[in-house]
Image (cartoon, rainbow, N blue to C red; front, side):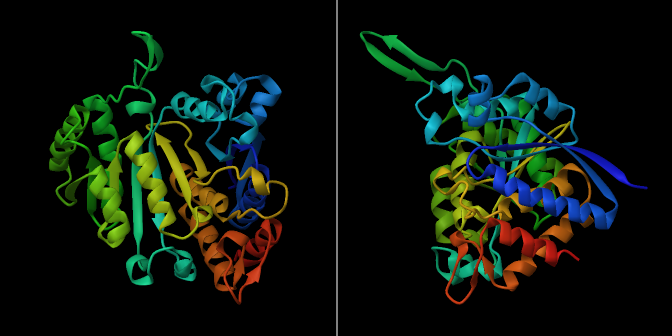
Length: 359
């Protein structure tokens, strides 16, 4: 019997529509082979939503996402909207989407593909074999804490943001991280700044207490500054990392660049129930938008994460990941991962190669 899934597409801005088109074709091909039907509905978010409605996250978009089985987001933002007030910027729409869908856990893999190892800016012996999963808390911390704003103070201005976590929020993301570690190598590193911040002292206490429920996972702790240094010094020491919103934002991008190109990396944002959001970690790249230069592989791999974590279709996810591996072995490269002696292709041609590789 055919299984049906409702997918909300949020192509967004810049290269978003181009890479989304490739991912749709790949999903349709996989669906035809495995008797899966995807019903796609497109909605507005980010800059294109601002242009059309004046809002970065229209209410209709959020409601469409809530009614779907999964959400596939491409990219938002661009120079055009950078001068808008913060509440009206594309990024505010993304924060609103995460909050509106109650997505509290962001999973960001950083895996070194053998075909791209020389694309990394670090030495081969440092990055070869790196396979890290960063679990970032997504709806708490300094990005959402109150009070916040810019205020008049004693004849000057004062900018305020509040970093705050409850024990419940820490336990919730901690369980996601411990369970992720159980499925990997059984090692979890919790990153905080407990030597300075009271909120991090609570974080460390709660994660430590939670570890008693996961005796098969080895728990360690690092301060965030040391963790950033260790990611560059010897990244193979890490398996799964769990941390708060701000630290996770920074460390996950640092881990991403170990791979040589942020254009290769997917992510998943999950809640306790309801649809997750699956998106590449790169931006909208407005400087190459519409030129058929974009790398669609991170979007395609995000579709694979959607199948694996959002729709419980691991076989379909495996099929897509194998196809990506195949086209890389065949030497196809977009500009961001191009190397001497390989075959340069654009976004559309990479999509065509993926379709041929799907078996």
